[in-house]
Length: 503
Image 1: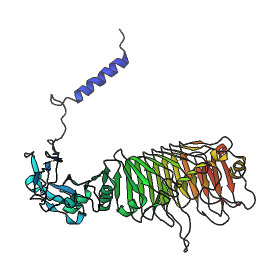
Image 2: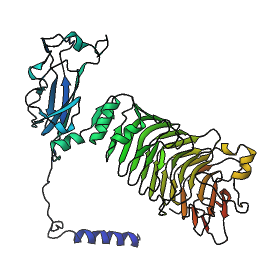
Image 3: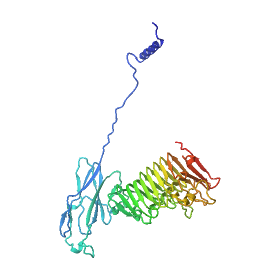
Image 4: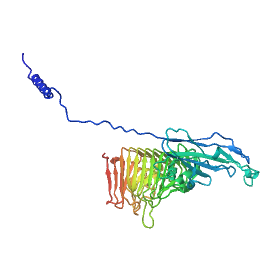
């Protein structure tokens, strides 16, 4: 019988390996060590507050006392500040004393609203920490009150809206340096414009507890360095008339989680240097000519953020920048416009409207969003834009008349001496990048990069127009040649077209 040499070799190697792994009758042992586990357990904590009352049906009868027992109950496992706001519109008809243990925060009160606080130690074993707000749980009516005190002055009508209201808040003590800082940081709720204005002026975050209507000057008067309005599913209506809401220099305004309605003839919001406006999860409807708003004249380093929102405008522009020069030749610059996960739609009776206009040095970032307009979805006359995973739509409504088709669709040549006008007075396209000007207006480099973005335009025009003048280059990346028209003021001007974006 013949032996298979391959099998013999394999068997011999296996035997040799087995022998090598056996040393003195045992297996190989390495030099090694192991620690025991270190287990860190983290304790969770809470600060809860409740406000209750068992009494009611109050009648002002001079010389009597009535029970009234608002109580604040705290359930906290860490040290906390507890606040109670007492809103008194009793028109000097009701007397009361604040219970012991409460200290007034006089600097935060108003004529009708007083703020009191107390410190409550964190104790997991004490669940019921209740504190009366009023001394002896009572209100009093002065025996000196007369019939005339019950009537509106010089009328035969009894006084109404005679109210005593209470609201309680609680917040952890650490890391706040003072009770004042803790009170400001504590989010406030607002059922009306007065409560909203007070919270904003304090610098506190505020959540709406009802629909509220305000005027333009209301926000200007009450905005703080970092104002935050949580619409909380409610509607904020801004009566604009023909004015503008100025977000003054160094102010930040965030509005989220609800609906904004406004009207007006000019900008809804005008952002000044170093300021910002953020919409997050907002449905915004306006008839203001300049929609959401714009960068104020000569403003620098401004920021617009529109995130997870749906904006509908009947007007001229949704977002714009101001390129006018001051006497020293300064122009707005450094604008930052960010649109993410949002839908922006604008329409106008004649179709003369643009979604977003960036015409100064700055940046525009659009991501996962849809911008729809009748004349141009986006115009980048200066600055740098990146548009990713989005859709830009030009409805072409502006081109419905022959007059506009001839003068505004701007193919690859212009009549001698013709330049583009101000604002959105540029050819109708889905996307316009660059500028044509003989006066030196909008004289900046311009660039736009498109990544996975769909461009939809009217049938008679290409979706993109790139232009250059005054020696400033224009660059468009991510657009095929067949989808773009190019126009240059002079042979020395440069338009760079890069067909694809390289990730």
